[in-house]
Image 1 (spheres, rainbow, N blue to C red):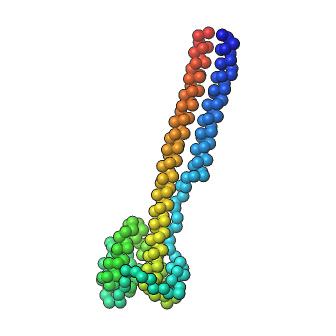
Image 2: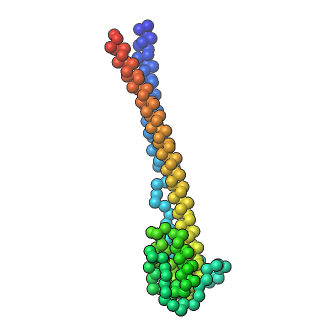
Image 3: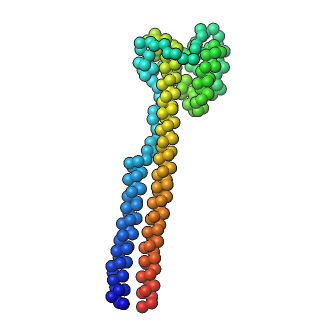
Length: 200
């Protein structure tokens, strides 16, 4: 009986303790590796559309089929969304009710904090296209196309990051649960060993 007790105490308990510790450290290392390799916590893609991107895309000028039309400016009644200020370079192109309606329809689908940025980048694009004597309609439509494409890519990337973070959180929860279980094994071994010492 003493031989069995010694075997349990010196070999089985020690082996179980070492195995449990290896499992715990392995889980911790796995969490770190998964976090570094598979989870993208970056801020996202750049949604800025530069004037060069637009002018390069429409040279030589190509008239695209689009429902967006612009009439000859004749007034200065700019009924834009309240959160937006229209730069002077755009005012001469967006002072007809129909043009303002089109612009507002574009802005309306954007978050409030992105609307002014949309207008400011558009103003830079128009300034550059005017210097190169490119058609305003082509520049505006191409800018809108490129900008909305990048915003869509950013939304998709954000959704992907959120999904990755959800999976990672679930993985961490599972890892913590396993660590708790193996820690419980170590606690039970310590209790059993101390109980035997007291009985002796």
